[in-house]
Each structure stands twice: as structure tokens, then as C-alpha cells.
Amino acid sequence: MTFDDQEYLQRDPLIDRILITSDEIQRRVAELGREISKEYPHSVPIVVSILKGGVMFHADLQRRLSVLHEIDFLSVSSYHGRTESSGVVRIVKDLKENITDRDVILVEDIVDTGRTLSYLLEILRARRPRSLKVVALLNKVDARVVDVPVDWVGFDIPNEFVIGYGLDWQEKYRNLPFVGVLKG
Ligand code: 5GP
Image 1 (tube, rainbow, N blue to C red):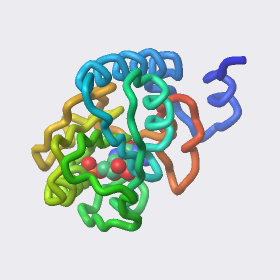
Image 2: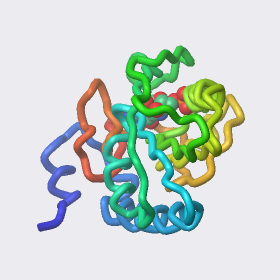
Image 3: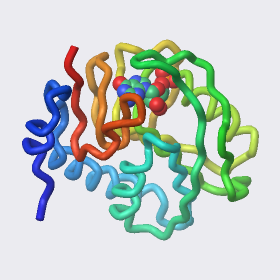
């Protein structure tokens, strides 16, 4: 059985439209998995998921990595309210593993202003990993305030508030298999 994006769309009148379908996401995640795997032929990277938004992408991406790897989780509070990034970020849950001298891949749901990622990279770099790379499913290029390196991007998207595939609106809609836009 496969997900039916249309069914989700019809069930909830608050969802305006689908921006990226579940099929498009899955195809791109498979490509990213292949590209990322090529980078780590001789090491066992730690693939770090950022709770909660990055979890769905992380889970799918892991299954597309053909190299041995470990996983870990990090939680930051990065924005409050409906649509805006406040720039205030704090670690709510830290990594369990020591990343010193390890290859680290940070899995982000979305890079908007870039503030959250910039802060996280600073913290993680201080722990002296051997390498630190970033994969983001979504990239709001026009919203960038801080210049941050993103090594792999799933999709460049317009500057709109999106939900689904891990991303929430007031903690709801993370379960949607597609990336969509709410009404109004
Ligand atoms: P940044 O610090 O890059 O501005 O924001 C990154 C964080 O803000 C993301 O990890 C995500 O939690 C939240 N965010 C930014 N844009 C969106 C969006 O369009 N939809 C949702 N649901 N969250 C967003």
C-alpha cells in the first residue's frame, strides 16, 4: 500500500496545496542517500537528526545509506509562534555520542534564515569532529540571513511556511508524507 497524498489533502480543509509530493521526496531522498554514501567509503559517520522536524527525513535517509553508520539525536528550540524564526536557539537535548574525530552528518529539515544551523555548527565544531557536513531536505534560499554551508540540499523552495514530512504547524501535520502549504 502506498501513501495517497490526495487523500490527506481532501481530508483536511486547512491544507491549501502540496508543494512536494511524497513520490518526489522519496526519489530525492534515494538520490541523496547515494550521493552521501559515496563520501564515506572508509569511515563510519554519525548521522545526527535534529528533533523533531528532521526525524522523518532522517529515518528515510538512513535506509538509503549504503555505508555503515551510527545515529544520534539533538534537540534545539529554534522558533516560537506560527511562521517566524526568532533566532533564539538553545539545546534542549544534547548528543549521546562523543563526536571528536568522527565524521558527522547533520540532518536538517529546513534551512530558513540559517540562524539555527549556524549556531549548531558552531557548537559541534567546538567538539572537534573530523568532518562536519550538512544535509537539508528543504532550503529557503531567499530567506537566508546568515550565510551557512549546506553540503546537500533536497529541494530549494520559495519563502513560504511549509508543513508535513516532519515539519509542524503548532505540533500538528508532522505526519504528512508530503510537504505542503496551509491556507491563509
Ligand atoms: P532558521 O533558524 O534557519 O531560520 O530556522 C530553522 C528552523 O525553523 C527549522 O528547523 C524549523 O524548525 C523552523 N522553520 C523554518 N521555516 C519553517 C517552515 O516553513 N515551516 C515549519 N514548520 N518550520 C519552519
